[in-house]
Image 1 (spheres, rainbow, N blue to C red):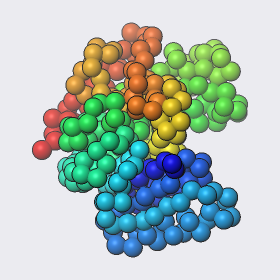
Image 2: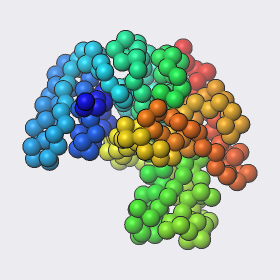
Image 3: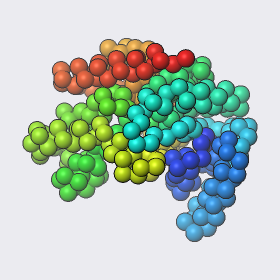
Image 4: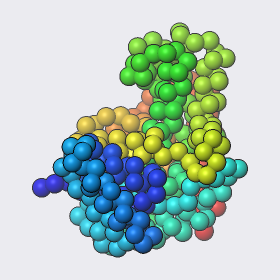
Length: 307
């Protein structure tokens, strides 16, 4: 039986995530959006790319949420994107309303699915998704820490001119200005980054990682990043569908790990067929632990604004 992944939201991130799922040959895709014609048009375009690129997976576009029925995984990208001058928190109330509506439909049509949320502000929307769906916590997770890790790895690669495959970065905490890049757990060819770059260079990479999304928003002027966010969501879906057990930083429900509880926050998580199969505790410096606690407080403050 062919696997099925649904993508809710046919904007830039959603359409690109759908394309990556198809091109990887992971699953057939249902692309759902409330805008008439948008998911149908993009789905048709992606189907027509198949004979050229060589994928046999299929996609349908729909304005009807019943299209997500029988999905193993649902990637939620629905929501407003940031424009220049907007913080992720500026999006909170509008995207919370959209997220609640999406969750009601997921409960109705795909009650056994695993849900990966991409909508900002990410950690708060993941928490709201968990609360609204009522699914077990292992079946609800957020995408962002993998995206932040990828940005950090890219900046290291640009600085050292090394193969990106040799970089193993780590980012925890919130998907926002208080995210926690973790130099003590970041290596290049199995060497700690501190052995390869001076502290001021590492500090600059950490800061650029924290503002990586805003940097792209400022450059684009009329939108936000979508290639790397989509790649992150598709990669997580692949780990779950293929049961790889890979440890991938994800926004997950903390239940005592790292001294945190009752919030979704970026932590290393082993992903497999059951979704989040384990939250992995890694060694952090005292400074990194303090930064993670501060990051968690920012998420709780955001969560408290939910209505």
